[in-house]
Length: 241
Image 1: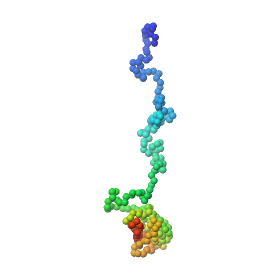
Image 2 (image 1 turned 180 degrees about the horizontal axis):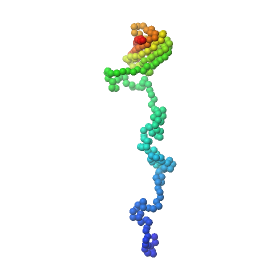
Image 3 (image 1 turned 90 degrees about the horizontal axis):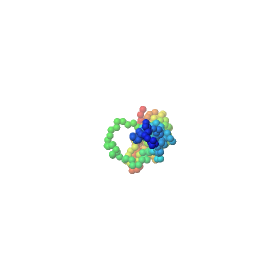
């Protein structure tokens, strides 16, 4: 401002307020600035959605999902944009463990010591699985991984019972039951194999039974394991009905 002609009256300096306060808020015609005007922020390439936050992607700040709220928690139910049944479905998971049969697991315990089972304990009841077989004839596999009680109907002839997957720990006895619902002609498991190898049946009384027509015959076998071999097999029949 030129004041060489003398004092200027009734003049108000538009910057006087700023000069006194030093406040940006007192300026007029200020530019409208947004967060995208920051050089290291980009909300244009991928516009934000409700609930997003700014995340550093290695080169700039950009919109991203807030894992702390809005249903986008770190639990599997909402992880990585997949929600509800997707991650709750085992088939959609990767690196899942392979299941193994007990016989393939090494270093399994051989005693109950240290596992909370000591000496005698009480059992109120037991509920055993029954493997049902129909039309037995020839050699019939009885897999003890499935059951130790086998129920036969419509047996066609005397047959060989092949017991498989027995535990091979020494100084043990394994009990297996074969129940036969007899028809008008009675049949029996006249021979036994263990894992495909024949073993002599030592029947109670010294001779094989004949079975009982139209009855329920129960054949109970005890298989003894000693000295790394199956050494004895005892058999007994009980008839009902």
